[in-house]
Length: 393
Image (cartoon, rainbow, N blue to C red; front, top):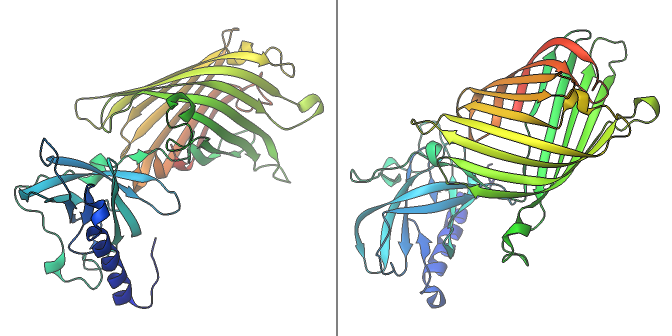
């Protein structure tokens, strides 16, 4: 994001004025504040901030977690600040590494200090330095500072609106050739700082919506063969979710799935579901194995009473790879009749992303078995191979 301004000097003066006013306010002396030698940073390079306030009984911490808040209630990206030099009684210098893909005017905050907030402009230039900024003005981390690379530490903090399931469009298959696409979002209904701040269970209430469609590209009118709509309402608990390392999340709720048709082509089911998402990191700290079992109870299946024979009462999701590299995922189903389906997705990023599972990816999809669409829940097709791109995997 670029912030246009006809007078760059005026904008810089405004940023410095805001910072000076914050530091000079006596009422905030008991809280930590953030200051910086310059309001600009260079993506991918070191940046310096000064924390002003009382260090506390244990003194100034060596590592300090911080958040970069994108505008428009966008994601918050975690970075780690490292202390440098001998501290004074009321301030400490810290250095961090700015993520490569964050551009424009953003806010740098400390999650444990509500008043610690600093406006920063990240702007690249062809020579690698911020525009109109001399090399001597770019932050140089001292030799004793061990910076934590932003691309190893950047994690997306949960926001109200976020991604839910993979989003992609792929082309291929046979009988007929078709495109398959999927869109998926979720929304957290309550804010952790609102009226339910003392009710952590309610804070995990989500509404989600996923749409999956099969687009026939061989027939004359190019019709959509079938489209599945899946709204859901569920609770999600993060039993374990460190910034880096193994994690466990649990979810349970209600999901409706239908194809929006009537008459003989109408298909719909209503289910209660429970799901676990376990991720185990290998010794390199980046590669992980994900296991996601899901069980369902059918509340209503009158449009397709025998669907459990082909889809069963749950599915098993598997994931292996790195968020920044190659990733293989699988969805396995098995019905009570001994048949089911297998979906494999192989993806690789074609642009660097700070959003863990979001970016731009080459996407290869394999599907074999029953129920490639809800309309065809009791029909089996030959193995289908498709290739395309994904925004979320």
